[in-house]
Length: 289
Image (tube, rainbow, N blue to C red; front, side):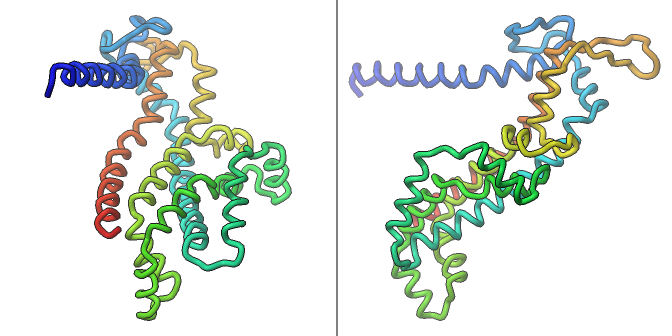
């Protein structure tokens, strides 16, 4: 490797390290602030290590219980919503890629054309209201059922599956569901794993649609509840044991940081498992493709 190439690689790795540090800083700062003493942390202060370590903010979250109560709603929305998304997207992509439908190219072109327009908030609201799905999870699942972009991506992946495999399975007596589940899906595990990841993160972070279509506070997911808590966070008195002896006060900054960490940590912990599945699916797809 020449000197110029070595210099270039040093510059590249330096830039990558700087970007990595910039990406990690907010997460490290939130962790440090959440475990710091409320009296030692000021608003907007840069903290990379806990100052006067304590867990008062997390104790208050447990006593309050709002975040953990709303976590159940988020889990239900994420699991069911992701399943419905992947199921509907897979069926639509298979029909558009493997079924010999009359006018298929025109129909696909019309679907792609819809990507140029954003969904209208008022028409969607009127639709959900007319279907009597306001303040229900079903209304949220209906609004997020199909992603045109993901459907086109999955359609492209299904088209890479050789027709000879599908024809051979059909000759052996396989019906359409069997061909989809036994032939097309195994070859396309990589893209399906990617769709699962994208959909799951989207549902976990859902905020706008729940705010728009849900009115019962006991149905709010974590992101909506988190926004409410951040807006109303003030000095919170927490007693140590019984009575107010040795009581401390939790400032808004530490309480906010603890709330943010509790909300984001589950999806961060799940991501490595989905990433491993994605890599495994990519290897299977490359071998069978």
